[in-house]
Image (cartoon, rainbow, N blue to C red; front, side, top):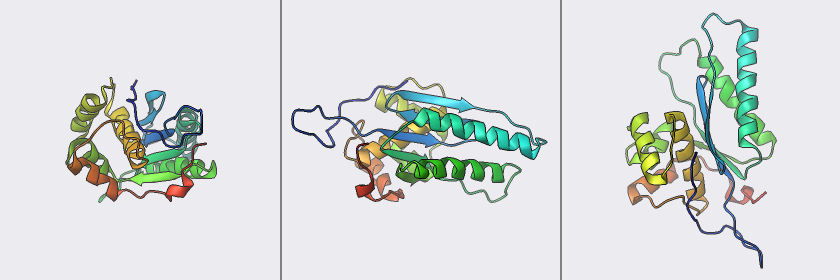
Length: 197
């Protein structure tokens, strides 16, 4: 579970308390999708086999997508890790791409703006280097945000969420300039589309 640090207000009505934008970070995966929201982080694990039938594969993807969307709930912005490029496609390439699009399409259909963040950009924001491995991102996330994280999937999701909040001028924590520069490498939605829901 994560703890949010105080951050500047986005919009404040007279006499009301400022609130954080509700931003979700999603590290979409067939084996363990990480989700980070204002309520904390979670990992949604599943297992499959190469010999699974098309119906079994469909059922698995539907389960992952449904569970992820329930965990996300209604948010102002979803920050999703972009698809990884594979020089040699494996047996799960179609399933990974299908799952990614299934979740992203459902978010967009709900009217939730989506930011797409490349894996190297996420790593650069977390550690200062786009070549950092997942363990380095996990360690950086735990240190910077004071979070207790049980997996690198949750760490990735938390960093994705932190990037979205930073873009919305509500950073979870101070980050060095070199890390902050990673925000320029994100495919952000139109800022006007991100409203407090």
